[in-house]
View 1 (tube, rainbow, N blue to C red):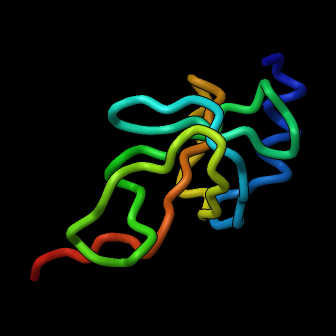
View 2 (tube, rainbow, N blue to C red; view 1 turned 90 degrees about the vertical axis):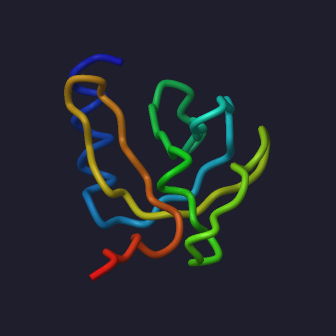
View 3 (cartoon, rainbow, N blue to C red; view 1 turned 180 degrees about the horizontal axis):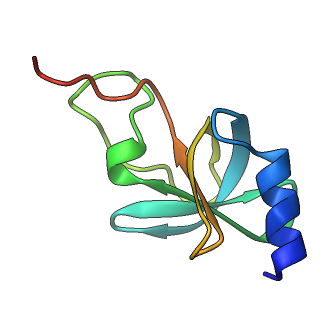
Length: 94
C-alpha cells in the first residue's frame, strides 16, 4: 500500500472509529478484515482483542467470510495496519 492510500485509510478510520469488515484471512492468533471492498487495507483483529460477548472467557475467532464490527484501537504506521478491538476493553484486576 502506498503512502497516499495509507493516509486516506487513517483519515477515514481514526482511533475510536467503528469499522465493519469481512474476514479475509484467518490465522491462529488473529484475522485480517477487508473493509470498504479495499483488498489492500490491512485491518487486523487479534485473539486478545476479540471479545464480542464482553466476558473474560473469550471464544474463538470469526471464520473467513464472517462480518465483524469493532472499534479502531490503534494504527501502526510501520506496518500500515489498523488494529481493531471487538467488544469492551479488558478491565484490570484491581
